[in-house]
Image (cartoon, rainbow, N blue to C red; front, side, top):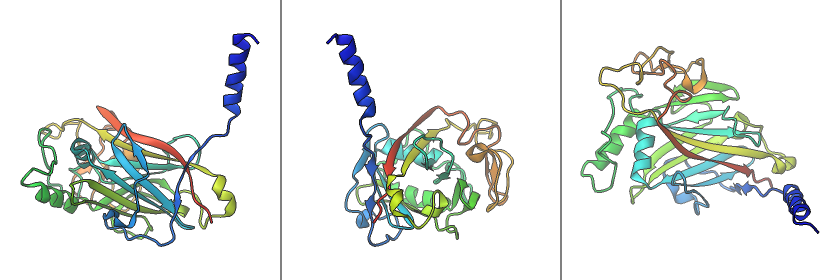
Length: 274
């Protein structure tokens, strides 16, 4: 057989081979979303590009996730510029239905400005590390939903959507991000046996918007927007006001706007069905 023919047959065989997807684990008992990973046996997935270890589980009605971020530089990016989670019901990462939490650090109920400069990493040897974490969490009481079924826009972190999120640090100073998302918010509930064949795409984005000008210039965190609990145009890239407080957006500087860098991961998985 000629080498060219053999190579062509090899490509065809590879294309016909069944795709192996990651599998979420079945959860017998619901977890308490408190930023404590003790209820998860292990972090069985890891993104080397972003340095995020994570686990996915589900029951008939909810998807549960837990992220662990040990790298102080990645923690700093999350604290300053926020984190996006998308759950797509197709094999393509369309990033249509999403959650943004935490939000950029100037967004919050108090709007106290950035918590630290670029040369101050949130490492465990900082004498003020616990105070830094406390200040950050006090400001992070807002969450943003995009195109989820029945809910979109800006909401209080504690809300009636069924979506529960919590961020904290463990004893080793690793950032722990835990959440519950009802399946009905992006798919349907309860699951049926046939749903074991459904492929989902989980995407996590961590974006850096660069330094904000001291005068609140147009490339930074500002804009016009709406009050908490409403919807807004342009998805994560639009502007929004937090009850008359600090605003984000302006000239497309949000999630879909210009960024200096982006890290994270995108992974395909199937839910567990019993």
